[in-house]
Structures are given as structure tokens and as C-alpha cells.
Image 1 (tube, rainbow, N blue to C red):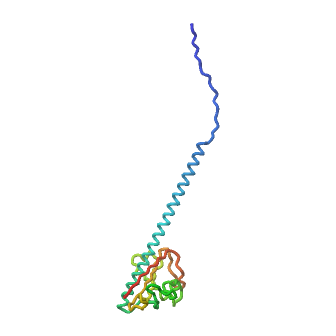
Image 2: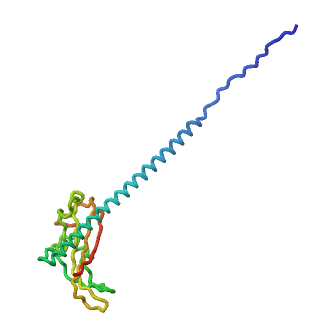
Length: 200
């Protein structure tokens, strides 16, 4: 008779392999990458908000300057029909092609805009808050303007007989604090300048 003996495989001893921490290292690297991406996203979002805020304040300053320009234009038009209520600074010569450099316009001199002197400060007209309409609460410092009488030279260097006025207006953003009448320091913040010319 044949004897069938079952042959069992020999059991190999189990060896404990040391943990190398590869998964932990990969997880930490992914965490660092995700953190950097999140930081860049937050930084970009903050930069976008800053740009949007700057655009908004510039737009509000532009609107204030436009209000001041329109207010002074309307006041100048009315002053030709009634007693003038606006301060018109002394005349200056403005050449048609080559204006004399020695004669500066008042509106180009910052001392007339930002000074506590009663002599130079009289040229600046501060727009009343009532002229701002519903935008009064948006501004701390109201816009300003200067009206200057111009003597214009034609192409033949002869003074024209028309009455010409240069209107310079500047508006401020909502972040600009109100000017102290005793100091009238240079404003800090958004500031927009506009000019127009009226000829009668």
C-alpha cells in the first residue's frame, strides 16, 4: 500500500520591518503646499480689495471735483447777470501759442490752495455742503475751486476783447480729513484736479 503523507510547507519566521514614515513625509509636504496656495490666494484677494478700494476713492474724488467745477461754472454764469458772488483772482496773460513762463497762474501755485494766509486763501472757494446733494455724508472735506480772469492773446499776439475765465477745481476722496481753517495743511489721500475755460 502506498502511504500518502501530507507535506506541509515550512513556516517562515515573521520579520518586523521598520517604519520609514514615507506617508507622514508626503502628508506634511502636501500640507505645506496647500498652506502656501491658501496664503497666495488670501494675498491676491487682499490686493484685489486694495485696488478696488483705491479705484472707488479715486472715483469719489473725481465726482467731487466735477461737482465743484459745475458749481463754479454755474456761479460764474450767474455772476454776469447779477452782482458777482465769487472771488475772481487778478488777471494773468495766457498766450495762444507760447504763454510767457514768467507769469504763473494762481491755480498753479499751491500756496493759494493750502495755506492759512488770509491773503492767498481768499482766492479759493470752498463748495458748500448743500451743493453736494446726497453725497454730503461721503466726504469729510468739501471740494474747492479757483476762478481766474484770463487775458488771452490771439495768434497775432493781440489781447482779445472777450472775457475768458479759467476754472480750476479739486475734489477729495472720502478718506481725506476736513481742513482746519486755521492751518489748511496739504491734504493726504485721493485728490483729483479738473479745469475748464469759459469765454463770454
